[in-house]
Image (cartoon, rainbow, N blue to C red):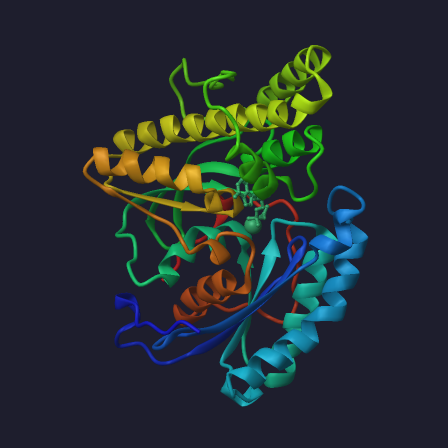
Length: 358
Ligand code: KG4
Ligand code: ZN
């Protein structure tokens, strides 16, 4: 359990918000308190459920969220010694994500809020990721550039305040996490591939292969990662044909290393450009891929060289979780935003359509 008192919250009441995340294959629940900070959170990962299929099966994901949500909320409130009457609002992920999975969380959260007679609010999943570093003791100062790197998104965003976002660049094809997952699959690694590929890359030789750094030779802040996956496939095919069976493990590790280096380098080059272009000194990194240790080290070094600082949440808050949704929801509920009883979900939802927040 983490307790802290963010500077921003001083003077506000101790509104407690229950956060619910069900956009993909993690069920996340959390309670955020405006004065005490994050009181607690629980994440249940469906990895084992989807592993046999090599990726997320949407229908199975939805059904599992149905099974897990109520017991998880009950257990969390019990652990925190909170009664339903202690909760002042419910925030849930309304998009982007898998439609069925989002609907489960939205319907559950809305039903709960209605029965507890408290407001409910649909939260943007990527805004949740973007604000997750605010759950740490040292918070990034506005304005900052955020690199959002997850399984579905790779975006550079200029953040002036909560809800004031300017998209600077994004992937024109695969997201960075998607490229990690697909390349991991080529190398025979399980789902989800990102952490498995990163672990394999640790054993790889950094000097054996050099992969391209896509779209870095021209101006701009967009990304393209699908070519790297193809490059990995071509390298794997060519090299496998001339590799003895006992050396295949090493080959896979060397390809993983070259792939990871290329993604990390490309992201770092674009981060540098974005930070210089925006004239800010803080870079926030969030989303599942920001758990990658090499990427963190590279971004730390980059920001130190630029006389600034990189901020990212602890690893467990980089991947999907309820804490970031509780926090983003608290920001907006505390600022007086609310919705009426009718609700919808948005499987596709550009972040620049959000209204300014607190
Ligand atoms: O944010 P997230 O949990 O879910 C989405 O909103 O997509 O991100 C999941 C993505 C997956 O593609 C996963 O392979 C990747 O983050 N990921 C990593 C690492 N940990 C998770 N990629 C590279 N290195 C890691 N250590
Ligand atoms: Zn996510």
